[in-house]
Image (cartoon, rainbow, N blue to C red):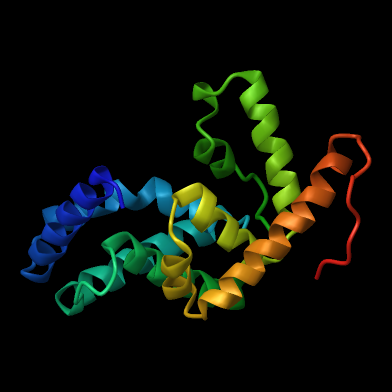
Amino acid sequence: MNDDDIDADVTDRMLLQRMSAGDRVALGVLYRSYHGRLCRFLSRLTRRPDVIEEVINDCMWIAWQKAGNFHGDSRVSTWLMGIAYRCGLKALRQHGDEPVEGDTMSEQRTSAHDMDDEDRELRDWLSKGLDHLSVDQRVVIELVYGVGHTLDDVAVIMQCPVGTVKARLFHARVKLRNVLPALAGESPRHQGNVP
């Protein structure tokens, strides 16, 4: 962890302490701090904006209820992502993954006004590539490369061995290496059987 991560975790731990004492302002601060990250992370689980918002609310409700039980075995961000991941899987079992009509949320999540055409094209291309991965592979890619968690953190979040995380990451990268050139109109250099 770098100094910024350490400072952020110290702040998050103080917010959890305040939340455990019933401070709703601390909950609001934590919610605003994590909303964007959770949206991006959960968008790798589902394309349904209604489910994403529901999961974020469920995650924050659980964080509110369990703030006093946080023992500091991991970073607060790892703890929250783990809660969001489990809530997301539960929501997928209940609601499915098909997007609802009139999905305007995806446009809001990408903050299109901050990107030029080239960035937008690259993001769309990568998003199409990620659609070819399994949910677990997309989640691992997002947690490692998008959020910046370590493999150990991802193992805690996904409640699986580090070896499983490494395997998912390996297979996801191989699949992307084969799929992305095809999406760009090129032939893939390495073909392989990837689950």
